Length: 124
Image (cartoon, rainbow, N blue to C red; front, side):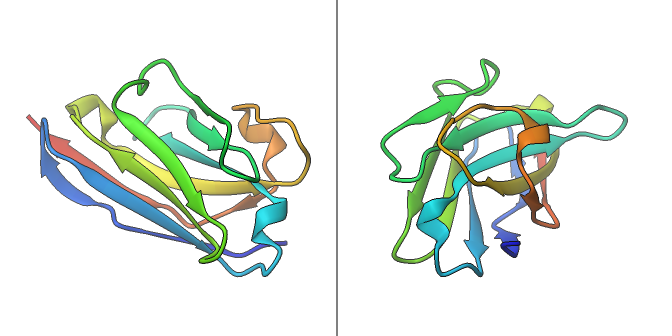
C-alpha cells in the first residue's frame, strides 16, 4: 500500500490561490491513478479531481472545474492540486488518494490508499 503525505494547506482569503502537494512513498508511483478529495465539517467526502498514470487525462468535479488543476510529476512521485479563485465553500480537509487500474473515475470507494489530509480554509 502506497504511503501518501499531503502538504500546502493553509488559510487564504476568497479569490486567493493555494497549491497542494502529495508525496508518495512508492517507487512505482507511475502505476497509480491519483485523486484529490475533500471533506468539510458535517458533510460527506466529496470528489475533487483525478489524473491518470501518465498525466494526460484528468477529470474534475463540476464545483471546481475551471478553478482547480490536478497535475503530477512521476519523477518526483508527487501529485499536485493548484487551486485558484478559492471560495469559502472550498473550505475542507483535502485528501489525496491512490488506486491501481486504468479507469480514471472520481469515486472515493475505488481508491485504496489515502493520506492524512491537509486543511484548507477560505475566508470571505
